[in-house]
Amino acid sequence: MLREDPDTSGVVRHGWGHLRPHRAMLALALVVTVASTAAVVGIAPVVGRGVDAVIARDRAALGWAVGGLAVLVLARMLLLRWSEVLLARAGERVVQDLRDLVVERLAGAPLRFVEAHRTGDLLRRATGEIADLALFIREQVPNLLGVGLTVVLTTGMLIVYSPLLSLVLIVLFLPAAVAVVRWFDRVAGTAFGRQATADASMTATFTETLAAGEALVVVGRPGEWVERFRRDNDELLRASNGTIGAQNRLELFNLLEGLATATLLLLSVWLARAGHLGVGTVVVFVLATRNLFEGMAGLSRLVGQLQTARVGVARLADLLDATDVPATDVPATAVPAAAAPATEGPAAEGAVVGGAAVGGPAKGGVLPARGELVTTGLRFGYGATGDEVLRGVSVTFPAGDRAGLVGTTGSGKTTLAKLLCGLYQPDSGVVTFGGVDLSTVSPAEIRRRIVLVPQQVHIITGSLAENLALAPGEPDRAAMERAVAGLGLTEWVAGLPGGLDASVGARGEMLSAGERQIVGLVRAALVDPPVLVLDEATADLDPDVARRLETAVEHLRPGRTLIVIAHRQSTIDRLPRRVGLVAGRIVTADSAPSVPGQPQNGQVARDRA
Ligand SMILES: Nc1ncnc2c1ncn2[C@@H]1O[C@H](COP(=O)(O)OP(=O)(O)OP(=O)(O)O)[C@@H](O)[C@H]1O
Image (cartoon, rainbow, N blue to C red; front, top):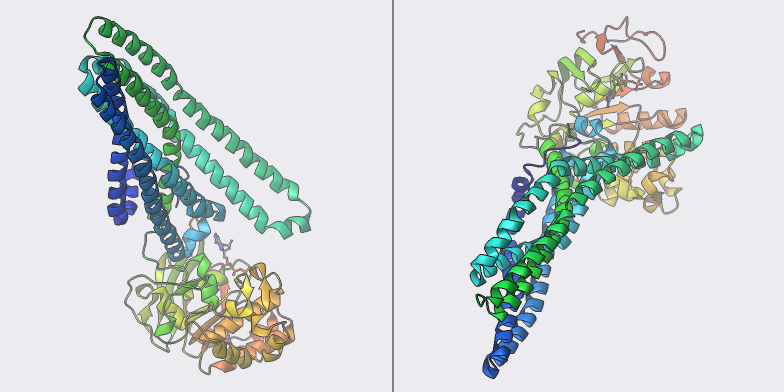
C-alpha cells in the first residue's frame, strides 16, 4: 500500500539512483556552474584591486583591473547560460526516464494494487509530482547550485582576505543560521507532506467527480460532490497555511543579515582606520558580504521549494518501491488487453496498455495449446475489507468444456474469473492450465491461452480500428476484417460512418453499451485463445444480437474451452453444463443456483466443493 506521507529521509539516495545514468552531463554542468560562480566571486577582488590602483594612481594596474573585470563579466554571462542549458537538458532526461519508469511500473503493478488506490492519487504521483520535479530541476537546481557555490567560494575568499573579519562573520552568523534552519526543519517535513497529500486528495476527488459526471446529473445530487470537493479544498488551504508558516520561520535570515552586515561594516571601518586593513580590502569585504547574504537569502527561499521537491520525490519513490514487484497480476489499465488477448505466436508477447507492449516478469513457464483449467483450494480476499471472497474453490474445466458459471450477486463469480485468467494471484491454492501452475508463467504467456472478456470493455479515444489494434500481436486491417466477418458483423461495421475508421468519440462515448461489448468480442476473436471467459460479455446486447454473437464466438474455434458468466437465462441455457458458486464456494449441480432462481439440471460432477 502507498503511504500518504512517506518518509523523506531516503530521497537523496533514491534521487541519485535516477541521476546516475546522466552523471557525465551533470558533472559537466557542475564544472561549468563552478566556473561561472567563480567568475562572480572573482569580481569583488578585482574591483578591490582597481580601487587600490586608483588610490595608488597606478594606471597599468587599473587597466589590468578593468580588463579583468570585463573578462569576468563576459565569462559569467556565457558560463551561466551554458550551465543552465546543461542542467535543463539533464533534468528533462531524468524526468523523461522517470515518466517512462512510472508508467511501466503502474502498467506492471498487480491489479489489486491499482484497485486499492484512488486513481487521482496515482495520477498525481505519476504526473503532478514528476512535473513539479521537472520544474525544480529546470529552475531551482541551477539557482541552488549557483547560490550554494557563491556562499562557499565567497566564504573561502573572505577567509583569504581577512581571517579576522571572516571569523567574526562565522561566529556571529553561522550558529544563528543553523538554529533557524533547524527550527524550520522541525515543522517543514510534516507541513509540506500534508500539503502534497491534500493536493493529491483534491486531484482524486476531482477525477472521480469528472468520471461520475453523468451519474451525478442523473441522481440530481451534485451538491454532495461539491461538498466533498470543498472539504478537500479547505484542507488544502489549511495545509498551505502550514507551509507558509514554516517558510515564515526562514524570514529570520533577513534579521540576521542586517545584524551581521552592520557589525561587519563597523568592524572593518574601525580596522581600516587603525591601519589594519586597506581600503581595497574593505571594498572587497562590503561587496563580498553582500554576495554572501544575497546567497544566503536565496538559499533560504530555495529551502521551501527544496522541501516541496523532497516530498514529491518521496511520494514518487514510494510509488516506484510499491510497484517494484514481479508483475504476476495484470494492471487494471490492462483490462482492455485482457479483453483483447494475445494471438498465438511470438508477436503476441506482452500486455497491451494503450497500445504499448509491456514485458512480463521473468517467469519462464510455458502453457500448452490445450489443456484442463483446474483450480485447487483457491482462497482469495480483497484485503482492505478482510472478508474472504473465495473460500477454497476447487473446480475443473476440461479442455473443450462449455460451462456457465452461475451464482447470486456478490457470490464471487467475477473474482473467480479473474483468478482463472491470472489477473489476480490467489491468497492460497493454485490455478493450473494443462498442469502448469499459472503463477510460474508470465502474464503475456497466460493471455496467449486464457482470455477474459469483461462486461465493461475499455475503449480509448480514436477510431474503431485503433481500438481493435489494442489486441496484442498488432493485428492488421485484414485480420480485423476477418474477425469482424467471423462474428457476422461486416454489415454493422459497414453501417458506421467510415467503417473501421469510424470515430468512437472520447473514450468511446459515441458507442452504445452494447456496441462497446461488440468491440470486446471482436478483440477476443482477433486473438482466438483456447480458453475464453465471458463475464457478462453480452449482457448489454439485445437478446437476438447476443445469441448470434455467442454462437459465432463458439463456432470460431471448435474445441475451445468456454466459461460464461451471465445473468441472462437464455445465455446459460445454451451451455451443456453449469458450475454454481454460493458465497465463495462451489456447490453441486443440485444446489447450484440457476439464473435467476434455483438450479436446473447441470453437470458439475467433476467439481469438488
Ligand atoms: N475490487 C474489489 N475490492 C474489494 N472488494 C471487492 C472488489 N471486487 C469485488 N469485491 C467484493 O467481492 C465480492 C464478490 O464480488 P464479485 O464481483 O466476484 O461477485 P459476482 O458474483 O461476480 O457478482 P455479480 O453477479 O454482481 O457480478 C463482493 O462482495 C464484492 O463486494
